[in-house]
Image (spheres, rainbow, N blue to C red):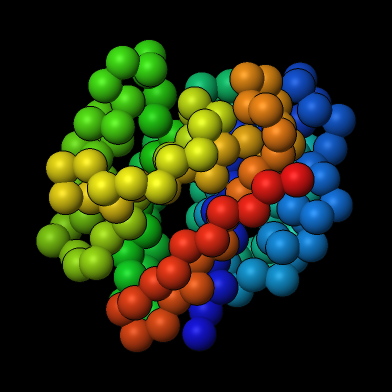
Length: 167
């Protein structure tokens, strides 16, 4: 069984001083880490990359500096489950439908497929247009999030189980 840690919207240093210790422990203990954008600095990206021991899939968020050279959409497959990752740029209206469309476009017919996004700082775990969407919220509790949150996904042989963690 593989453990995938999902985090997003760390916003270090503009909205938070550091990634909380409990998030760092979960990220460090995962087999793979997904960050759905808005690191906010090269230093925050380097921290997450180090915690992930290089096993990081990450995308660029709307507040990431040019020095954080990441794709807008990326994908990885773990134990037969494909994760399509995007930040979810844009306004809040139609967010879920927009992200589901991006995931479908980049899934290349893979099943099962899970969409991972950020941007809203709101935890999301629902199916939209046939796509299971996950938003882990903000790992640092950056405004407007009420508290730090993240998700882990236990994956084995094409099956997966999602757990949301909060401070």
